[in-house]
Length: 505
Figure 1 (cartoon, one colour):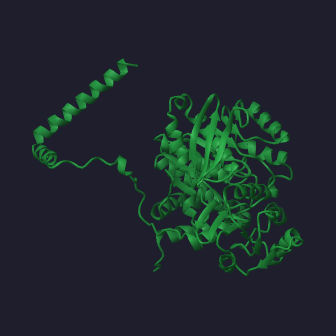
Figure 2 (figure 1 turned 45 degrees about the horizontal axis):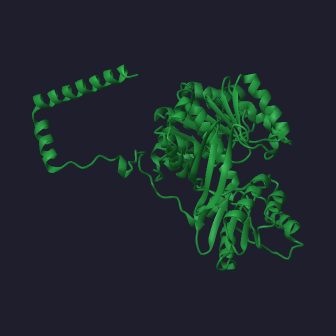
Figure 3 (figure 1 turned 90 degrees about the horizontal axis):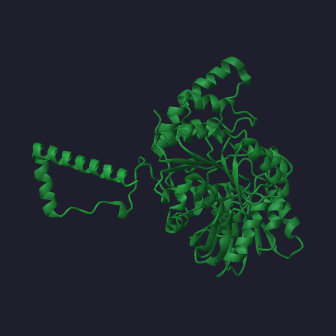
């Protein structure tokens, strides 16, 4: 008999599904969602795409919704340390126990579809993929919770991504650039895939884009009969200053500006992400947004956490993790490091995946690194040590900066800690998988296998009863007639209050 936990068994079954073939096809996830009763249509949703910044925007929208008292589910990818990170409710990822339960509930129906495909197509049959299964689990868990709103990050692309069955009341399009070769070789080609998330009548919020991308988005918005808010026109970062632990920003949406927002993440790109998130939140809540106090927005954005994005995970030396996995992301990280961290010297630990523009990523970090250590990302898809070293020498070979090679990430991090002196920093970058591996070293995943529970802040808890009040309550509960009369009096009072509220509208 196996000693593995229900979570371990569920995760093993999920992993066994593998990535699957990447096909422009929504048939499998559509069939699975239909068998589940299309749970993804049971709640409003915000759908976020773009090349970089998607996960940050998702977390920011979720934090704003939570500050407004809305139960917000968020679905992100990929994860850094545990697959449970991908499914979160009110900023807290799904428990191991509930993950296993949701997996098993969905897997029963996924197995039926797998069997049908096998009978129909034989050895050429395509099973429900890893990502499709996780996405269906998010659909189901959010509906079962239930959430007031769900915020979904596109896995890759848009039109044929498994997340694209959501209602998509609000569609967010972050900055678009070239990243995955499967999506196109130009920003305009990539944009044509990403605008596929725009649903009929949706409210769209877009970052500033290159002119050729703007044309693609405008055409898609017109075809869908949607409306759009543009960064730089309808929303913007009006002011921004570096602050302890992040930055102090003033954001504008339409005619409304909200100042003194302490955003606990670094870099101009994160301020732009916050403006997009605020625009999406305003579109989601509509007229209600106009009546919300500025302090609600400050509280929501002030509570944002974005793991693996210029995240400080260790001191002495200071170790910063950033999942920059394309030149665009590396450029943003370099600018933020230069602005927000006063390092004397910076030791770079870099490890990328083999299908990425390794030299392009490293070139964007050329001017901020004082010492370079390249290694292999903890993934079968990692770029080889030879490729990492060759790319690093191409970038730093004529600068006099030392380039070292470490056999694995653990060795590289240990070497970086030895090289860094007082006042120096260590940046770990190149892939989210690299960042996840480093996070395992510095911030281990807590062993919280408890059931999902509502966590009350101290202010949410009822005040303890005084002794006299406790005695009265005990006496009331002991007298059934008195108890029933008290309940009836309470219901009568509530009904009178409701009538008065109605008359006052």
